[in-house]
Length: 253
Ligand code: PGA
Image 1 (cartoon, rainbow, N blue to C red):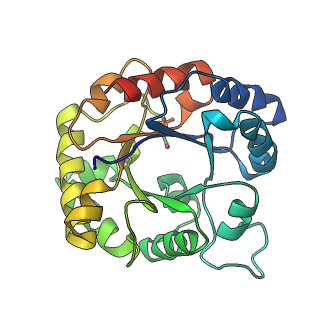
Image 2 (cartoon, rainbow, N blue to C red):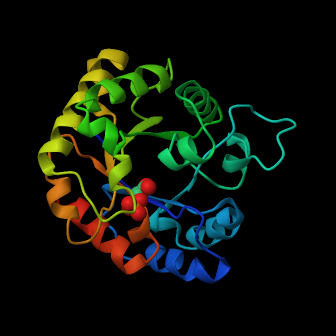
Image 3 (cartoon, rainbow, N blue to C red):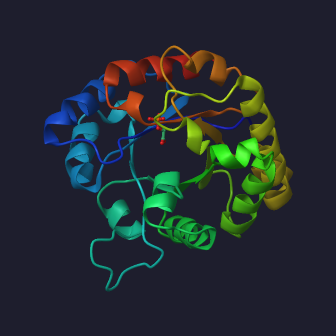
C-alpha cells in the first residue's frame, strides 16, 4: 500500500483558547477521508481542542503533542509525558523538532527514547530531522541526516506508529523552501534508510513528510514530488483557511 497522506499542523508556542475557532473551522471543513489531518497545539490547549475536534467525530481531525519526555513519569517539573498526551486525547506526538533540539539541546539519543516512549504509550511518533544551512553548504546534508536517522530511529517500529518529517532548519519559518530537487533527493534517501531499517514492507509504507515554509501556493508542487507523503506545517496551520488549502492540495496529489 502507498504511505498514508498526512497533513500535520504544528502550532508551536502559539494559540490561546480564543484560537479554538480555527480548530473548529478545520473540524467542520470538507476534508477528503484519505488524508489524515493532525493538529498539534500547545499543551495548554490539548484538552479543549480534543473537545472541539471531538464535536465533529466523522471528520476525524486528530490531535498531537509537540514533544514528550523520555521518561514515562516522574520528577520532571514542567515536562509532559507521552501517556499524558494520550490521556488528553492525542494520537500523535512530534519528537526531535529542530526548535527542541536547539532550545533544549535535545540529542539524537533522547529523540530516539522519546519516540520509543511515545510508541510504547500508543502514540504515533512524528520524528523530525533536518540539516542547518551551514551543513548544507558544506555538502554534508545526507551525512547529517543519515546520522540523525541512525541515532534517533526507534529500534522497533512499523508504518502505523512512525512518521518521519524532513525539515531543513534553514527553511523553517523563513519563507525559504528547499527546491523540489533537494526535497526529492532527501526523501529518496530517507526512504532507503527506512527500508533498510524496517524492511521493504514497513519501510516503503512509512509516511515521509516535508516541513519548512509550506504554504497554500507551494504545497501542490511539493506534494507532487516523489516520496513526499504530506507536510508538517507551522505558520500556515494557524489559520484554518490556509491549512485547508494545503490539505486539499495533498488530497489532490
Ligand atoms: P513553518 O514551520 O511551516 O512555519 O516553516 C514548520 C515546522 O517547524 O514544523
